[in-house]
Image (cartoon, rainbow, N blue to C red; front, side):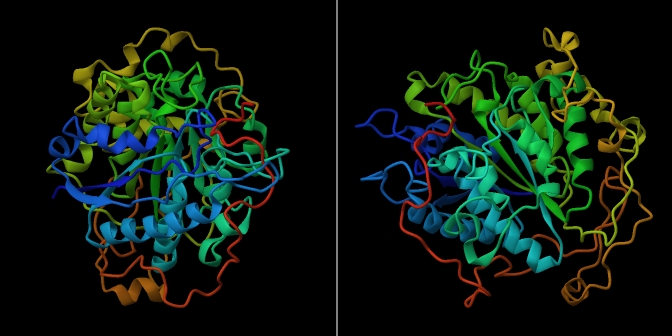
Length: 454
């Protein structure tokens, strides 16, 4: 039974600074540019429409005012969460086309609602060239939500963005895996101190995109499911310069395709968002075409006839000891991910294992934690003997019979399917706590750009 994809446009620029004092960022044009290359038809996807943002207008924002467009971003995030929720309620797989990285706030809110509904936690796989972890605790200013989105969704920053509906954080630090940041990312030590698991580009390339996807699965084994955020600036500017903050040292299109295919090839992946492509830097549409080709091939496991319908797992009551990474190659049904050239449906594109330079990457400190990749405690498999929350009232009341899932997770889901009924992710009529809504610009900042550059 294949999973149907629903494509939702989120053409917001609200999280970015203007390229010049009199211009507007071009990321809002990305959904239209990608659709022009027959993305929906090639995905055989349902058109889920568009969530229209407020007008881009920094107005009289000044450094020290906090995140620019904060009120507009908060309102947009609530609307986006509603639409993502409606897609998941239908049993579909949402693909959200941004827009800038501030769309993550809407996705994160939807995932937190879902986790609350099923009595478990939802994780985040954050594929991005930058950590986007700037916040008042580690920077002299904030200002551009697209450069602070990971900090905000993990509960750092002003409450009118980081605590919508009184929910803070949307994702726990231990439920986040960051892939593709540059080795010298400005906030890499802050991620390490927070306990957020990372795999920068050198480590990703050394291990391979397919095995990195499997590794990410394992890091989130305690979660009921996970969401995937992809910022196309994870790609190297040599192949993808059409972004607002290009940074050398990224990955190739083939690697992104393999990584995406591995991340979505499980019923526990609940959806994907794509951000920061700027068609203003793509006059002939060639980069849009490359993105569409990559996304279509990367999402092939979702629409394959043998694809497993989405299922949610309940979190285990106790932590599970980690095992060594070589366990991955012996898991039935997942060993095919051990090498890029063996990934189903991707080998035809020349796997990342054959890209130049992949075997010559320096591994020193490549795991982003100041140590070598050999740290076995990060690469453990899941212990099938750990019990789930089968007796949880939310689970039992759903009346859903657990279904068989891939052996990569080695246990049966005990939560309801993502399509467990209408209104699963709807905003409650009377939220438990309404976070105070500040003015459209609050706290301290000087740079409206996604990146931390002046």
